[in-house]
Length: 333
Image (cartoon, rainbow, N blue to C red):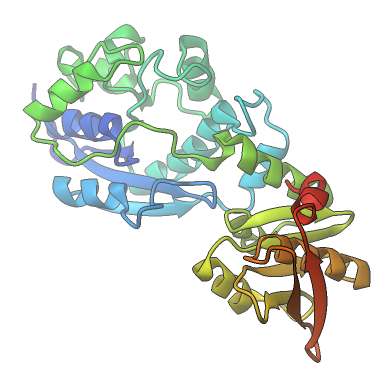
């Protein structure tokens, strides 16, 4: 096949096994590839401090462009046209959202097509045949979206019909097994890829409860508030939001980000967590936060002295017994 070396494609590169194999399949057909990585506070892909997309892009020698989903993505989460998965994950609407952005980028650089590492039948909500068709159509990419791993099981794209891509060199993979992808990865000398696992906090029921609570109680949500959903234990005490740290680094983080209208609490005499109170700050909510903090301290049948920082600091004494934590459980998210 006579591929034009000036032909460019845009890849969605998570850095996982599927997307890496897809990139290699397209590179091997003489097409220049630019990779896109989409980020949001709900991604867990870099939780270990490693950006798998960046590692993969560097290994392939291709450029990587990072695009934040932004606060506009919250509109998708609040009301997904195609519904949720097992928690608050709007998988089909999410793919449409990011592919629309990818389409804009592809057009800006004159790319001939886009491609992904999606596999027919691998994910029950977003990768069955009807879902793939909906995603392609509603993202405005009919004929322009190639799924190299399963291409032979799907209608030919424009790139295949136009001779840019040799369809015979593409895959016919389907289902949840990754045996074929791993075999190809070995052939392509792809050794570094994360284990197959969900990379989205929206699929976590516990995180989803926190997010739903935030969206139900606030119309305007900031990135700071979204990122705080990943920190500590969360309580909704009437209109107030209370976050209790889980470890030293979280305690220090809560102290460092405290706003003027928020309250920071810490144990003075007994080792324990810190807490942050936002929304509806008053004596009652501060007393609850102090009780929540004390209940997670090392105190057993003791009185905990807690320093409250909001304006001029003061202290409060909170008795702790075996029933203290039980009394706050109903407020925990």
